[in-house]
Every structure is written in C-alpha cells, then in structure tokens.
Length: 198
Ligand code: SF4
Image (cartoon, rainbow, N blue to C red; front, side, top):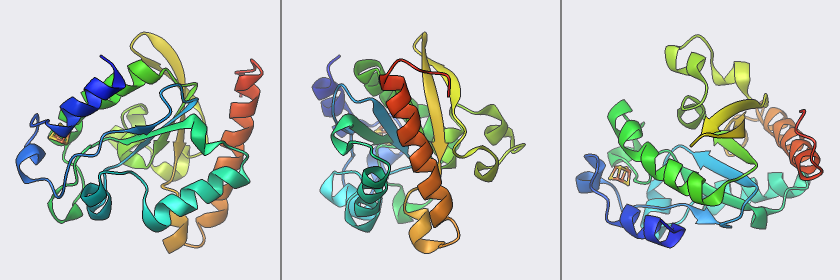
C-alpha cells in the first residue's frame, strides 16, 4: 500500500469506537516518505483534529525550534500518533483503541523505513518498551536512551522522548527535553555516517 492509500483508508477508518465519536476528523501521518526520523505522538488534539494536521500551534512551533537547535532537518521527518483520532474530551487513549490503531502506524513505518523512531510520550513508548506497560518503569527512567526494536522484521532504533510541549508547561523539563533532542541530533548525524553504536 502507498502512503496515499493508507491515508485515504485512515480518513475513512471505523476500526475502533472512535470512528463514530471522534472529535473532528482522523489525522493521518504527514511528512517525508523517505524520512530518517519517524515521530509517533499520542493522539491529535482537538485543534489538530479540526485541521487534520499534526503539531500545529505552539507545540508544533516548539517542536520545530527544538529540532533546529539540535541540527535536525524538519523536512527529514514523518509525524504520526498512536491514535489517528482525537477521543471525546481529549481523554487518554484506551488499550482497545491503541491496539486497533497501531496497525496504521505499522503500515506507515513499513512504507517510510526510517532510521529512528522517536516515541513521544508514554503511549508511544510503551509500544516498544515492555517495562512501561507493566509500570516497572516510567518515562523519567527511559527518556533519551535509545533502544533497538523490530518493525516488520527490520531492526529500527527507538528513541523515547517526552512530548516537546511538556517543557512549555513544566519549565524544569525544558532543559531535559532540549538535551534529549541534542542527543537525538547527534545520533542521527552518526547514523548518517554509518555509525549506529550510540
Ligand atoms: S483511532 Fe485509529 S483505529 Fe480508531 S477509528 Fe480512528 S483511525 Fe481507526
């Protein structure tokens, strides 16, 4: 399936209950089909579901700022989320919704074949890091530490990160998030030179 076809199917998806009661419209991934960095966020916000775009407004501006500071090219990214639909009242995703929607992320990963997956926040990170599912670890334990995962039989490095906008609300997190993005930028530059040791 091409990204265009996948996105058409996401727009019409009714696989989980959110197909009937989502806020706004479904938001497929967006960005470069050959992206090195594949961001997986949590879910579209109400505003994003209204416009059908990811990371608009302040959080998007801050994400682009963090990338620029870390020497990461925004044009070399693809952005999606664990849920393509915004739940009523912007509540957290349920396990059923996450399971039902994950196939769309896998389809987009399969087409994009990135160097790195950036798992933004606990709902994305728990798809790759088991101790987050069992509650043995929290984002504070694993952010900024890359790990290998297998996606469709292909090894991909996963970089867990706090949501970039978290630093806008919690100023003590801002330097932590900035440092994580700097680490990500360094790892990406090394990977582009064939060094995957980080
Ligand atoms: S959240 Fe995902 S699985 Fe559920 S209806 Fe939306 S696109 Fe389909």
